[in-house]
Image (cartoon, rainbow, N blue to C red):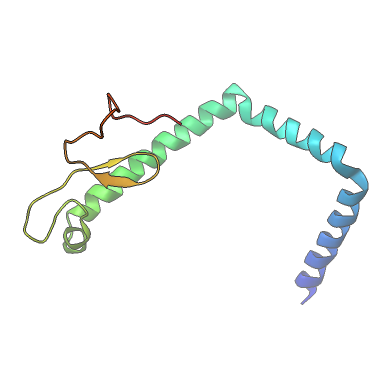
Length: 111
């Protein structure tokens, strides 16, 4: 109970101090935060973390595919045993059929 009261008291104090600081202080904090995120060291660390996350994902996916559950959940295998290739388009995964929509040239999307 005591912890909850301290938490609520902290929220109230933060609200009052934030309200007094105003919009300018908020904008200043946002600008400082963006500077930190754009720093080369932070960008390098984010790249390393992303690479490690991708590697761990691939390893986990590979391990799962070698289990009975993974065989049942495999999105690339249909009930008749044929396989479909899935590609990521940035919005979601769609099966590829080798047919490109008319008027697209390379078939890549740009946003």
